Amino acid sequence: MAISFKWPWIGVAIPVCIIAGEHILTTFLMIKDSKQGDRIFTIFQGCLLMVWLSYYLAIKTSPGNPPVNYKVKSLGDPQGFWYKYCPKCRADKPERTHHCKTCGRCILKMDHHCPWTMNCIGYRNMPHFVRFLFWVLISGATGLWYHWGRLHHYWKIRNLPSYLISRTDLVLTIVCTLLLLFIEFTLLLLFMRTIDGLSKNVSTIEDWEQDRMHHVFYREAFWLKVRANFTKLHHGESFPELTSWKINYRELPKKSSVPLNFTFEDLVFPYDLGSSYENMKQSLGPFYQWLWPWGGPDRDGLSFPKTWWKEEDQLKLPFPIDGGDYQPLEGKETLVSIEDEPDTTLGNFPNELGETLDNFGVDMGTENYITRKNK
View (tube, rainbow, N blue to C red):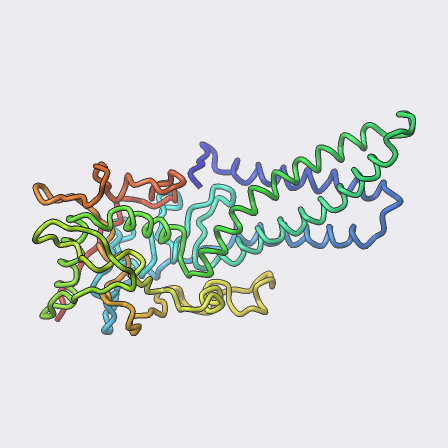
């Protein structure tokens, strides 16, 4: 996702050439191989048909954009008092929406800008993207099964005279096998990461936000912001006495803003519905539509069910709880950690994969939160 091209069409041309090349070579060998039946040929062609269809839909389907001149409505939801205004679209952003610097527009439930589809992956086209990955893996597995059979056959006849074996077919089989192994390995990692996020109802950007908050969770400046946000959002209420289900052995300085008995694991992600199926249903639609080429969510993508009612949510603050703008406060920054780490701000924090928010395509100039006064 951190890859970018001078000419965006190259990002589509590369996978098209790889998939088309593998398709043509494997089909050529299947047709030429009279010992193989028609079943594996039919399965392979059917899977590849779904690959091309889902890839086309992932490219051409809009990820979803807010209505023109969209305005956030409070309706008692904390999200209505804590929102983002996009100065480039000149409109409020619905929750989980980000402005893509490449597409030049706000994207509903933006996951990331994908150079391989020349499009953002968001609320509307996430199902097509997932189906594309799924069908590539299935077609690749079918191709590997076929090529493994050919390699096994070559091994059995290895003692025959070389003139009885077509070197061209052998080379093509080895090349196709290696290429498919590479495709399967790389896309399986991406597919597993995507499904893991969908099962938790966490977008790639929100997963990055969780990594960032985890990194700064025991910093004084972080909790000063959280406490200030709580005061603005729940005016008149005192900050709650936070508790944890874990035993705490941490020591804090006197008058620290960091809660003593509260850990990152005690935070409740508001969009997690508590069920992997319900979470995936929100992004992909009902189960019977997951493999249907045009299946997808039936909501508008402007608002999402949240778990504010859960007793486990002790803060009841919108995600991220610090407002997504970690800025050290001069003279008040205390890092409660053994190691002396540098300050981490919103734009420059790298997660474990070295990804920053900018790498996902987010326009950092539109990420400032606005807190509406509670009336």
